[in-house]
Image 1 (cartoon, one colour):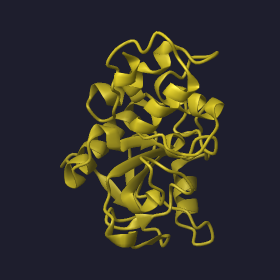
Image 2 (cartoon, one colour):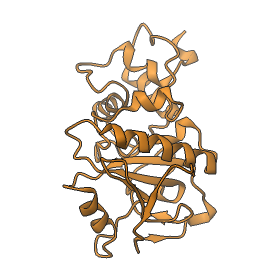
Image 3 (cartoon, helix red, strand yellow):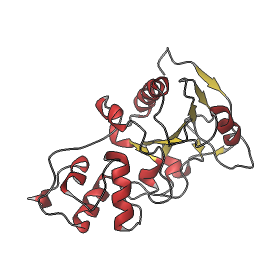
Image 4 (cartoon, helix red, strand yellow):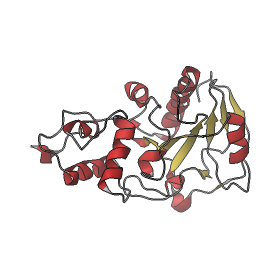
Length: 225
């Protein structure tokens, strides 16, 4: 952990052991959708809630750790990424205090970057291992939402985006699903939900039917040629 990170501790009882010997290979970013960071932490530390996260970051950039990184926090729920379920057992969860309807504060994003860099180094997690809750649970979750600055993380090598070219000249839902699954979007959802989910991450302002630009962030595929 970077020495300039002042991390508070508010231990949550809501955790367990990672199953089947799994270790963190993903980092899942959420927003709290609550009035304040403290309200979120109180809920995440409430045994009756049966939810938790490893970290909560307040708008002023203050980071609080609730669960040790080696333990299994209860933040991801039902979903899939890269063909595997039980994302809790192979991830670290970061909650950002935000309702999802306004941009994330500059100090909060600074803290996100510093925290991510440390976690990625400790657990040897690459940029493609940093995902949103919506990525692994399309149609059920939308956080961290359209206001989250994924491009900033991508520029800093803290989140993945392929962007090899402009996409195929002829598009189809079947081809899009194949490319999206290769990237990691393996949850069982319909075509419309899949497109909305990928756009939420990479093209939050895009509307209308599937188009070549929707393919570009996911990377080049030999089937295009």
